Length: 270
Image 1 (cartoon, rainbow, N blue to C red):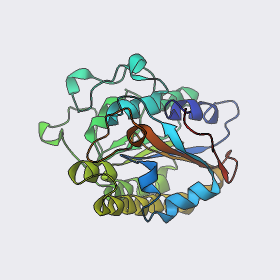
Image 2: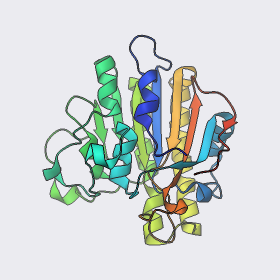
Image 3: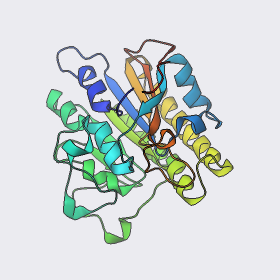
């Protein structure tokens, strides 16, 4: 079983300065992405990358599976006990994660490599360590000044997140770009996991993914890019904090440069 998604561990060899396997890495996270429910949704772009790349639908996130701690593990490669981010709201007094993120690793390999984070929740600011990101965008580009109190619960839908990421991809051709799509989680908490409304939300996320893929193609990056698709947690009913398969199992899809085509993990979770 994959203990938890580790983009950092996967990306480190891709971003090594000596002999990079991939010039461009895109990490796209579907918040609340229970893989069994996502497979029921109308998500042709997601399913194409699943079919063409390598995937498993039984990867596991951390426990407890909360958005900020889980994404911190995703982007540092370690569990809560090591990275220390055990809160799940934007709390500016807590500062930033104390361990290096994959963005730090990218800049260590080459400070000139463009890095960006586009998200739907302002709490991701806790992952923005000084010097690690060229762009932090949550419905707008932020600088290092304090976030206004009126924006501390800011929520940006996936289609807007993608619309803001596309011009950056076309212009900057980033070495590392993280894109977060919140809609599945938003609707899951409001109405429920697996509901028609959530399936529609995942369809919106897939449309956003389609825009990202089109931008990658238009920028001429298809043959030199690796794309990772995953999630921070799943969900059941209206929550996702329990140590049960519905909450902790997540999709993990790799596609593109350096990825064996049309491979799947059939190993059952332990």
